[in-house]
Amino acid sequence: MVEIATKNLEGYFKGKDWVHQLGFCAPDWRAFMAEHNQLFGSGPFFYTTNTFGRLLYHDEEVNCAGLEFHASYGAWGSHSIEVVTQNDWSIPTMFTELNEQDKPGLNHIHMFVDSLEETREACDFYNIPAITVGYPDLENALEKARATGADENAVRANADKPSFLVADMRKQVGFAVQFITPRAKMLHDAILRAKDEWDGSAEHMFIPLGGR
Image: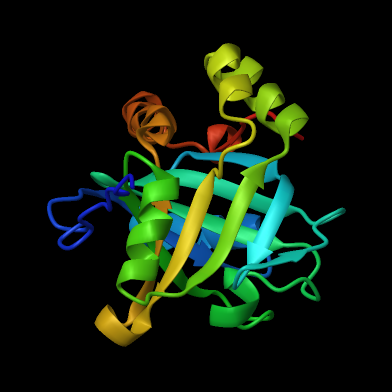
C-alpha cells in the first residue's frame, strides 16, 4: 500500500510579505483616484478593465460573462493603491460581499504567495473561506502583456491557473486578503517608478494600461 504524503501547512502564512498595496472599491474609480490625489498627492494612476474566464464565489462558479472590473492602480508614497468599480453588482464577488455599491471603501490588502493552489489548501487547513477566486480571460491578459511588455508565453502557460484569490480573514484580523503571485510585482514596481517620473500634472495623471 502506497502512503500518500500530506503537506504540512501549519504556519503557511508566516513570513509572507504583503505587497504594500491597499485595495479599494468605489462607484467611480476615476473620481476616487482624483479625490485621493487631492488629499494625499498620490499618483499617477494606471487604468484598465479586468475580465475573467472563470470566477468562483464561495466555491460556486458564477456566470462572469459581461462582468468587468474597471481598475486603477497608483503610487501612494512608498506604497500603492488599487481601486475597482464593478460594472454588474448582481454578480457576487468580494466587492458585493464586503462593500456598498454607492460608497467608496477598503476591500483588502494584497499578499505575495508562490502558489495560489497551495494557498487555497492552506485556507482550507485553517478554515478560512475563499470569497472569490478568479481565472484569467486569456485574450484580456494577452492585451495587457503586449501593452506592458510582459512575457506572453508566461501568460499562456498560466492561463488555466487562478490569477487571484481573496480570502475572508475578518474573523482572524478584521479584513480580507487578496493573494497574488510574484508575477504581479512587475506592475507594482512600474507604479512606483512612474511616481518618480511624473510631473504631477492632471494631464498625465491617468495612464492606460491596456486590456480595454
